[in-house]
Amino acid sequence: MVDGVAIIITKGLGITEYGQGINMGSFVGARINGYILGSITNVSESITSNNSIILNQNYPNPFNPETTIKYTLPSAGNVSLKVFDVLGREVATLVNGFQNAGTHHSTLSALHYNLSSGIYFYRLQCGSDYSVRKLMLIK
Image (cartoon, rainbow, N blue to C red; front, side, top):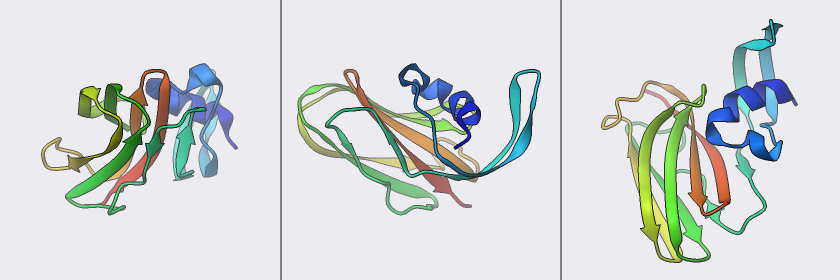
C-alpha cells in the first residue's frame, strides 16, 4: 500500500476526505519536497464508501472505442457519473442529474471525449454515497 500516492491521485475524486487510498500492486518513483513522482503499474479494482449503491466494472475492459458502465441505485436522487485521469482531472461527465432507483447504464466513448490510451477512474455519486472503479483504454 502506497498511501501517499493514493491520496494525491484520488484527491480530485473526493476520496481523501474518508482517509482511504488505493491499493497499489507496484509503484516506481520518489518523494521530492513532499511530492510523489513516479508511475503506477497496478491499481485495485474498486474503492467504495460505506454505502449501498452498486457500481459494476465497465465492459469491455480494456476497451476501444466504447465501454458500458452499469450501476444500481437503492433510492432516487441526484446522481453524477464522472471519469477522471490518473492525475484526478475530470475528463468526462456521463451522468449529472436526478435518477430513479434501479439499474442504469451509461456508455463512455473515447472518441467523443478525445481520450488517450491509459488508465482512468470513474466515480458514481448519489447523495453522500460514492463508488470508484478503474478502466483502461487501449488504442
